[in-house]
Image (cartoon, helix red, strand yellow):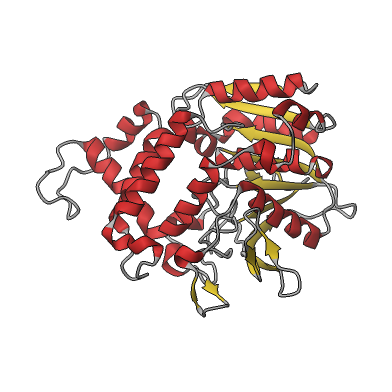
Length: 383
């Protein structure tokens, strides 16, 4: 038996022919599945629920040990089996499951059990592939509101997320202000800055340029491996500080690669980056990656939360409490993005708690250093 607490993914069907799940684009999913996990016990009053949103390539498996997920197959690699926030969620941890009932779901459009491009289109009997509809962050939030309804949770004690997950937490707070009391975005923001759009577009272009992509209708046995690996390398350099990257790279072996014909790898950092890209291909789907990057690049919180402007949007959130985390070495969601978020909240009459985490790990600090966040998370959640 694995030392960590063993958990299982659960599945909820949303939508039905008589009441399909309608996306913001106007497209519909006649029936869709949400993969989710829960940790802790829901109180009799159902007032201790915490909804956690995962980041770009995360999953519903946030804590404990899950050896396999039905229908996911080989994508559920060893890297996936321990919860991605296991250092944060559990008894006596920052998000203490002695007190809270924690919920985490894989996004609509995902590839870890929720309906996405790899899923079978009931209209054709074949995978959706390129025909899977465009997804907005608001669609992801709406689908998870249906999950909360299923669980009988009318109001969340808190919602939180890091990176893209933080944007989803903010979208939920603004779109459904009456359904959450505490909002905790970490290393996140309200906008999609120009540099982020460029990085995301570079990743999209890398995947689309792979000859094996075939417009999105690729052979599952021959996916756009090089394009997806290249995309991950582009993104990875914003996730990890250069200092941390160099420290990790010293443990990598410089070697030749079958992905390169003329160029020989001549430094550990090159070997490290190539390894990150190749490892990612084993556990993720290219069409899913494109859908989530597209949702990120098109994010407009005012439109998706049905507001007029950011300040008036958050004026309706004055009953909420906010804890905002900045990572001082973050080059994915720069500290200026949290400064802008805090400024909007203050103009809306909200006084957030704003914490700057000092780390040499960069954006990935939110995954690697729970001790830096624990006292602030516990104080915000237990208050």
